[in-house]
Image (cartoon, rainbow, N blue to C red; front, side, top):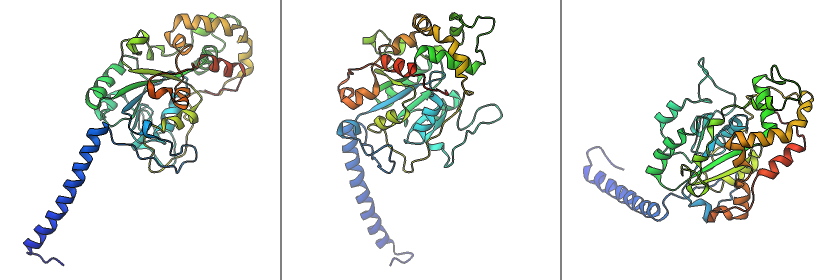
Length: 326
């Protein structure tokens, strides 16, 4: 037992303690230099997301960019990711700022922990973010890339949720309470395109140079907008799970859809799809972009390729007339 004033004993204990810590620190530096980023520790406590990370995934230095297009389930996706993984930094929620029992927290001005201003996101920075989620004009991603890649390095990978154009337009019309569109006939297909919301959140300039873009993203992948669990499971190969897995919320931002009223527009499906692809680069991209989930599950993501696109599958899902509520 040490007594007050026993400086020699105290010095010897501190010397041993400090030497041990220096040894641990030296080993840590070797790991960081060798791998670029420490391997993520995985926790298999959640039945939905197991301990799936192999050597390929654990050591990859990847920052994911979730491009939140309006009415693609982005608010729920952001919240689910933040309540599953550490280091998610989103307009609709951060990993570090989650509550045990989820409910939307907004202040009087419409902002709060579950709707964060971009200026606040900038102030917090992006250096510790494994995933960034934004619902801002596409140019904002240039700023995020400059802050992330210049400091952290690695790949900046875009994740774009895709939705069948016709069903997407109906969802946006429902959100705007414009169904049927004002001053339009019940079968005026062009009227549906007037419901488009915030389509400036995506631009082909975000894409890699090899795909005709300006290289804001090193790679860009799509996923079906309603495949939350599948995408979450595959992201577990790259991202650290939270110590405590939290409940998975549905962040509702739309009113219930009126599918009977929508049926009268079914004749517009093909025309709306064609015109949407001509009018908005987002839909043309979604018709041929590589599927993130397929790429990870088949292993092609790890060597930069993909065998499948989401275009046909999102149309097949929409044709099944599932009762989408978003």
